[in-house]
Length: 488
Image (cartoon, rainbow, N blue to C red; front, side, top):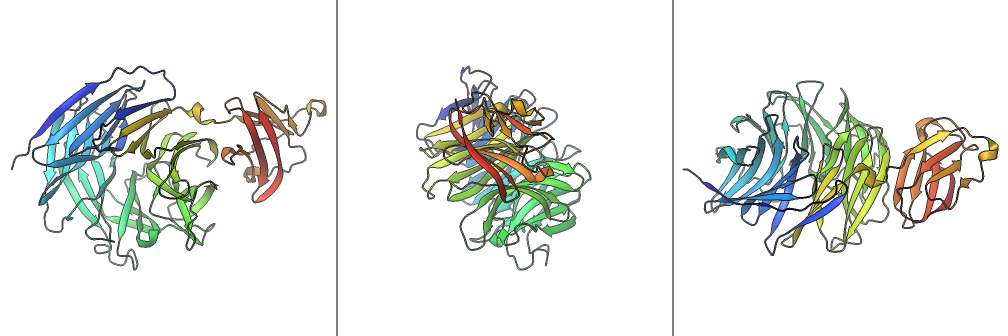
């Protein structure tokens, strides 16, 4: 049976904004819409996909914040986009769902640079095929140009299953495999569910890796070969926090070496609802070999959004959790951290939103910036662009100065730019000694390892807002010195 799609509209808004941090909104006028995935093309444009009521929906955002919308309508069907990847030839690989009363189909499209349909495929139910497609994870483009898609579907309440597909660059299905306890007998122990979180190519081998979780949130790393043969499976172990578990949201998109990747997620005590953000290194044995806790005491509930880690380069890694202050009714907080591959948190900003616009997805841009999407039902879609310098990555250096130049423990105070701290009496021990700066609300503005040899630590605080701040220098859990200063 043929199915036709009609392109409804293409609207170019002439918004001209400076090439810096900006924010723009798409007013929805009572129509429920969501953008759930995105990518950045060679022109540094970000392209996001999702749904607009019963239509599939695509938005291209230019470097200056102007945007184009495109709607796709199914013939007597509800359709929506789930994921998008840009291919080397400039085309886009898009996955989605097409729904009718008694028929749910996996929808695969190839779009050209103008977002016109080059080819599309509808994959119907077959024996053993999932009854419904719940969520698609951002695809992985393999070295040969094929695309691996991971689906998370829920055949019944309380259970999750995963599924792997390999598609050609034209959208033809080449391979398919269930990822579930039913198929890998004994692999997941007593678990009856499995949910894939993300998939990433291993640049040091022909394998790829899926990060996922079973019931009760136990995290695991699943390694597969090119032909979808299971190579290895490990339950993620954390020798530092052996009394904690991973909830279902954690993510990675960056390899450090042939046996180590970065990992971003939340940890939570078994019996206490006090999760905290966690940024670490995971090796091929499934062991977290190094980690940095992002201590946030101003939030009651904390989870990780989809696609919450966006790597621009080794020194610009964006981490985007979202939080709820007080309870699940809000207000919501968009929090953006900038980090490096050494697990140092270089900068941070928190954006409170009393209107409860929920951050959902984010994309790193070619100029090392970040574009985030927040939605609120049928009201509006908020699009924000951040640059690295907007997130207060404070320069930090250690040097030797004469005793005559040291005016006080902290000087000048107040300061309008550089702040110097006398550390001559502090035993700086390699990567164990850190400095943290907190604003008046206790939020972290800086969290850095003190590197280098010398007696004075200098920080460039020109990017901080005016106000009273405190700093703390600690080695491990031992606080060595703490004090306050004023930024003019």
